[in-house]
Length: 75
Image (tube, rainbow, N blue to C red; front, side, top):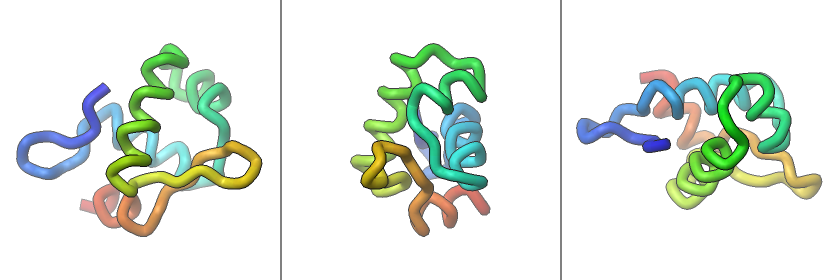
């Protein structure tokens, strides 16, 4: 799952992930079930978004959106 288009905007799949996490932190497994995307794709996307600073992992291994992720989401 790519996260960012060539023009710097979020892909539709990344928007779906970030929008879902914007409401409340959740695990990769929970997110996979919520957005109906295979777990391996969700984990790959989260890994990419984490390295880009769009999401971060909490102490209980849940993911949440960062300020940078919110800024891109609002575009």
